[in-house]
Image (tube, rainbow, N blue to C red; front, side, top):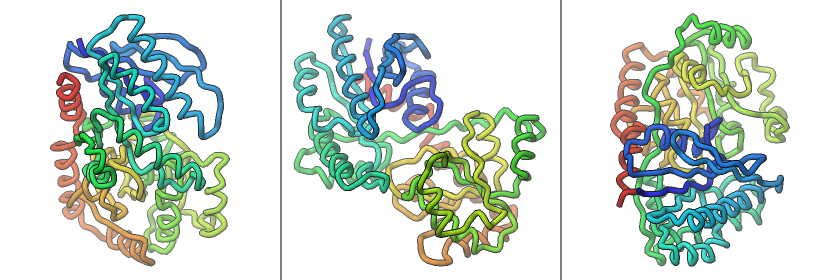
Length: 384
């Protein structure tokens, strides 16, 4: 039996978030009977529960601002080491999602090595590039990334671009890397077009099927909200722009109001968050098009989900996004009028043109990003 300890997600059941959805699917869709998963879960208690045939150990973390995630990973790693010792487990792997605890990992790597436990790391994206961090936190993230790469037995990258970056940036450590993509649910939404929940949601925000562009993602500057808002406002489209994101107590939201005056454009609608998986899937399916502005990181979950369900996808032109969609999407950049022109053109597309793009996108996801394929690849790695 292989015992796989997963650290770095907020835990399961997944509520929202890429890593959480990944762990949910990895455990729920497990095929091999020779694998047992143990998942660290951020909580207000220290319980140990079972879910998806996995052991979920709760980690109670105090509110420490940006340091909370670092402390959470450290506590989870300590709990993992103690659990392995107490239960006298063998054939163990510790899989850490993201590079938050680099300055401390050397110490723990020595302990894990003595216990004959392998250390796997998912480096995620370029966390040190995110604009929400100040200069010192960015420096910490970059330093932490370096040390996580240095000490990992294997780095599992969910983007070919990220894998290449790791090999180039940290070549002196001769990092052992592999590429395993993020997955997507290829099933259509179970909700019908006349479902009451869907109809009520559309009614609440005065929306009609196939008459809106959609954005789903974290409300941060590096996701190019400023460009998307300004360019959409310039466009001639009569369709709405629906933005599913959390903007509560967000200074960036007030900043964008001030510089774009998007609140004066009745087409632009911030609708909060949607946590019901079937509802958000149906909202994606019924959108005319999807705008994706992510510029930092590896394979983005919301992009995979959009390509699997939305007919027309307009993506920010960066290597991470092109790597995923290839010729199944349209691309835009930050040049003035570039995106607004593309939106105007997209509005005039024939059904056949949209169908061709949609089929290419879906074929791309089916071939390389289905959860079944991802899980099979992970289980093969773990069993080695």
